[in-house]
Image (cartoon, rainbow, N blue to C red; front, side, top):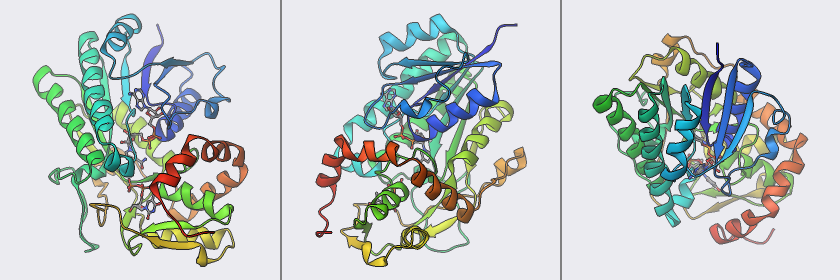
Length: 342
Ligand code: NAD
Ligand code: TYD
């Protein structure tokens, strides 16, 4: 019997990268293809431990480039697609929305066409809870799969658009799909433009940490390994056509997150600097994961165990994030923030 072929898009990024490693190690009987354009967020050095394994393959390509994607699908006849590739940072979508539409909307549509053309067994689209918009601070309210889509940022609007295209290819063409909508992830290989790795890396260097507004906005944090396990479960056991929310009930204000990291690293809260709020800053996200739990998923990390593991990982992998923050990212940071002198 020939090996199953799984195409993972965006497998050089944060979550896609963790998922590729998870799949290569867990399923030696599958061939895992990592397709990635290697934008600023893509990095292959994270795959040193798996890159020589027989079941790992890398393809450098742009998901929005139809002339490359369609022939690739024809040639490889993938069984499954797990689609992570995206522009993923809300702040960048505020300053540069167009690339979000090109990659997240057009790129998804090209992949859907290719998947349809070869009769894929399943197309799993990795989405976000941000497509639902924001919740108020009432702790008894949650996003369910029935919550209407009301995206507020160009990023979440582009993700919602791609979700609707995925749904439409299922309704119109019978494409076997799932959509997963996860809350904020954190863990190894998280790019240091996002709150948690930004805080860890800056606190370790005794640099100010920019907190937007009053730091009271709430996010629902999930360790990336728990997200990977959820996607694996939905890929293999999710009912075709269904949407699954992914989250572990770990709501924290941004200020709580930043203070937890500062305390764990034994530094002073004087490093916190409140800065101008993000435009259209969503107040609160919180996931109701009941549907996924019924499928058999439960998270293995609490926020406390996950953040401790993550901080230790950043302490052990300084070479990885120091290389990133010293490159092109430095210019981005200077443009995005104007912090007081450290
Ligand atoms: P990331 O920015 O770390 O990685 C994105 C990857 O996509 C990078 O490797 C990049 O090179 C690649 N890419 C970008 N444009 C491409 C293109 N045109 N063609 C091919 N590859 C391209 O993102 P992430 O945080 O790992 O998020 C992955 C997915 O998960 C996204 O779809 C995101 O919307 C979703 N998601 C993220 C979170 C989160 O907290 N980070 C939560 C829920 C859902
Ligand atoms: P982020 O990691 O960008 O994820 P998302 O916007 O997808 O939720 O931000 C998480 C929260 O942290 C969000 O409420 C914005 C806030 N934040 C800051 O306060 N300061 C920062 O420098 C960044 C990047 C984010």
